[in-house]
Amino acid sequence: MLFRSLFISLFALLFGSTVVADASHRADSHGPIGVMGDHMHNEGEWMFSYRYMHMEMDGNLDGSNSIGTDEILQNYSVAPETMSMEMHMLGAMYAPNNDLTLMLMVPVINNEMDHSMQMMGGMGMTPMRSTFTTETDGLGDIKVGGLYRLQETANSTLIANLTLSLPTGSIDEKDVTGMSMGNKVILPYAMQVGSGTYDLKPGVTYTNHQPTYSWGAQTIATLRLDENDNDYSLGDRLMMTAWYSRPFAKSFSWSLRGAYEYWGDVDGESSKLNPMMRNMVPTADPDLRGGQRVDIAAGVNWIIPGSVTNRLAVEFIRSVYQDLNGPQLKTDYSLVLGWQLGL
Image (cartoon, rainbow, N blue to C red; front, top):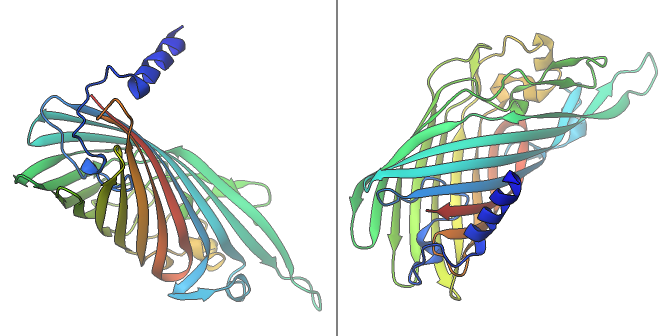
């Protein structure tokens, strides 16, 4: 009965006409769903959100040049070939006053990576090639923080973003590899679901709404504040993005967005990884984790009819340039689906 009641309540919130409405509210009052922390709320308002994010990585780069599996296996025993990452993120926002909005984000992550492995045969024998897959999943790093309104005019808002990422995600994930003789072993950095460190994420966001369009820009840094229990920290990151949105029909808006991201190599080296793995597979080398990437994205926001506080959104993100400390898997595309409910 409890689950039935919850389902009926959720259905009413999604599609009922009793939710607070404002026909003048535009679908582009929020940024693209791939951007977080882009808007404030008024005093006493809540917003709950769910995002599903899927990322595909396919092939390797050394710098900006493609490097094939055969070439990687000339120097390593194992070559990563593809990786997929799924993230389910639950979010909540609450405004204790008009100038401050508090945020909470809880991610659940699943990683899967496919590899090719080459074993040397005996004298005069052809090397043997095989494949294997590793997988990890679990709670990621929970993020808490807030947005502070620095400046506001009739059509623009300048926001200070400040979030603290908590080390709730595991950095001790294990699985069976092609060389572990059926035993589970600690996996390399990219397969862990957490950073293991407290990470400060300061940033700034600007949005501007005109009668027929809107645009915005955001810069967010990720600063690792310490070293984790396995004697390393992931590289610092810098993300910059800008978008243009335009309403169409009655309850829809479309958006185009560009993004640039830079991230550093791993600082230190995992004390739990087998030291021999660094020379066996590129993903275990802390000096082959940094890089930079340029993405373009297209998205749609939809305000569900009968409600201004209830929206669905989708954004497709494609990588157009990458320069990686490699060999390192390159990002192919990402997809973000989201639901936001304001109360």
